[in-house]
Image (cartoon, rainbow, N blue to C red; front, side, top):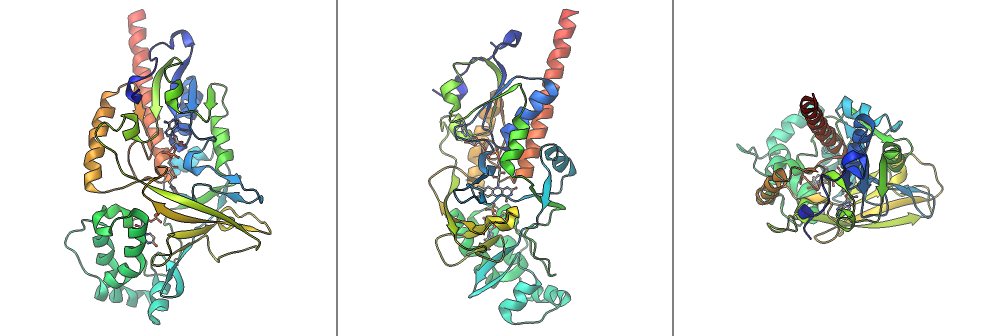
Length: 392
Ligand code: FAD
Ligand code: UDP
């Protein structure tokens, strides 16, 4: 039964049943559930096929008592004060600036590429000013930036591109950087100073008691019912609801009608080690050797003190849970067909990284969900104004 054909819309009159069926309890679904319940007093059923809330940002204590991110390291960062303020209603924060080292030429050097990276790799003592001229001398200047290779060679030249980006990207995506949109590698800045933080954003912090606790607070409203271990297709036809918010993969919703949208997956290998610290920073990237792309150690990220430590290795795979949309022109064209079909489903709102096929960070998904809420609120306002006019 196609996702688009099921359900009992329009039957939730007289406040029986649910006003909203929300599919997915990650950031997209949870923000909308919270807003609809708290601000509009809507009755919401939020379902997730996984056994927990939080989507990919879910965290939990492992068997050794270390707080881990089962779906890979999640570091919160944003430039948007309104998004920070919104989430601050549900959590306090622990300031945290993520640092990454890359294993290149037998050394662990800072990533993003900065002054120290270049000086250490090449045994130089450049100043910031000199590094700017040095980069100019090695960069392959492009008149047009068309893909993820162009972005990097244009800034740092082919040699650094080969050392840091080519192998990692081929491993991570199963594609050459030249086959991916420029936006993918453009996520990683280049610096001529000694700033070794992975992100540039003005606000960089972790939820003080973890993501799951934050999600619990978002969903703690008497109008919100949470149903886990449930694919929405199992229940959408059984319960009355007026409007659906869908945050799963958009091609699955339409039964892959136009073909499969590629989503990149990962296999996470979690390990606990009988030592207080495994590596000196939160994440070490392995662009050229090893089948995994990176190893992250959670205690750096969460600030937890514990006699043992837990780490995760990320092995990219083609099959498995969908984690990353794959930004490249042919996929954008296929997504557009699904997007047009989605626009015709007026009783379903598509939000989130999988449902809108956007390589979004957590803060961007929160922003997208808050915008979607404003549209829904305006619609309710219009309906109420309309019914008021009829009644009057
Ligand atoms: P999701 O979290 O994927 O939630 C969608 C939910 O829908 C899932 O729980 C799924 O089970 C459920 N679902 C799907 N289909 C169905 C169905 N048929 N029935 C019921 N439920 C269904 N962002 C950052 O800002 N910083 C980071 O450091 C960061 N690190 C990341 C590391 C990794 C390895 C990955 C994969 C992502 C990372 N992200 C990071 C991105 C972040 O995970 C996403 O932006 C965010 O979690 C997306 O939220 P969402 O609600 O759109 O999707
Ligand atoms: N990247 C790379 N080498 C690195 C780190 C990143 O080539 O050491 C490229 C790669 O294509 C990656 C992209 O930059 O997918 C974005 O990196 P980011 O760390 O933002 O990826 P995410 O945390 O979303 O997996």
